[in-house]
Length: 320
Length: 284
Image 1 (spheres, chains in turn orange, purple):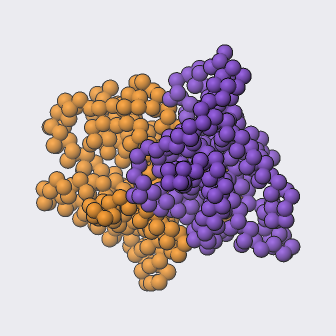
Image 2 (cartoon, helix red, strand yellow):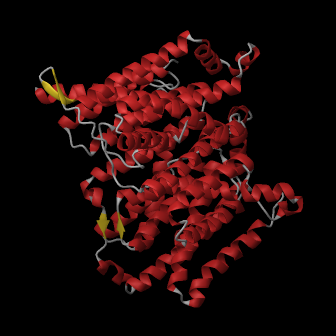
Image 3 (cartoon, helix red, strand yellow):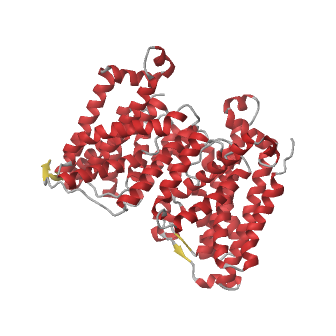
């Protein structure tokens, strides 16, 4: 398979963005970049199941929530260090995905989408009722927990570096999957699942694995986010709007491409930031996002990257 | 004993209204294989339409539903041409997202205009004594109206030419086209009727419960559960599904904490989808 040059600019771009707050010591820039990178990682991982495999996981935020809750519980109640806790969050999310996927991945198209919404809502209401996870009010860190990392300020920087690492790994893994024989199998499932099956693709295992990959990274991201936030509650962790944001970013950038979700996430974060500080648009940002999404779906289903690849054939080597 | 009677009666009456909302969703799915993710937004729109007609002109929701039904058909047909017509034969992702973006636009504008303050319509009809339990008259009327609208839809679908055309398109679009059915019109009309039913159900529910612009989402999720209970694509199955869910909600709360009810509902949703994707009462 011909190797492209996408990673040669994509990874340096992310590194430059991530280095900016470190160099300038700006706390505000760090907060913005943290959210930006979080979006990049979430969008890139959703893209593995949505863009590569063609399964619309509408309730994908459930893995973010599961990772967050697992890690938070381990740090808060068991007193684990953040590194193993975050890893445990990711693994838990991937395991749940394997388990749920075994069942829901038998469904296709819109029915699959509805089932994933159902899974997210069911998990949310279950967590709301579980006393040892704090119920509806959730859990709060005792600030002493940050002492192990040299105080709250250092702990937040630590969370930031973790997020940078996770984001870059997500993008690289997504690239590697796309350019492997395994990725080709996923794309064949997206185009025609029955034909793929007939031609000898083990569709069941391929799908399950793709689902687990796309759940693992949101699990890590959720774990880091709630470590930094210091509290977790069901409404935040399993908020369906975050699912929609992920889908929006993937579609805006271009689904099924490696650079698309990254570009989509970066633009979305800036767009949201701009709309939210503008007094006129502050309350309208949802309507505007809806309008943009509608325009993309109707007129440019390939997103920004898909559009550029269509118009400028020469760019195809660097825009995957 | 009285608690049981009142729970069962409430369950049946509300179940009928839930069923009506779900019929709209089910009709759209049956005819055009589109899961309408703007369903909840239109339910909320129906609630606000009823609210404003009530507070501006003093017309009770039980009168204005006719108006809202007509409005719904027009708005729904417009929405079809704006958001769906271009992508109707594209993969599911497109129609899911286009109806979802419609919902974002409606809810976004709605939040901007109406804010998210809770509102209520107090029709002030008092209570009726039924089988030894006092039930608010608005609940009784809501159930009754839902039955009437369902019956009317049934007559329309089975006795009129247009209704038969809708069913023909849902069975086989190409064949229907060959028989001289204007499929574009039928598709837009079905979407219009589906939206109108959602808005009517919203108006009826608004006369029973307080609501905000975001309330539609809850009823949308309920509609999914109902459709799956009653069988995807079967309008009358949705009524049965609605009854089942209404009963479940009202009777379960007598025996367990309210917080667990949504968990059970969505567990049912996922389990039925896995065991029988066509729905509990659906055809094979």
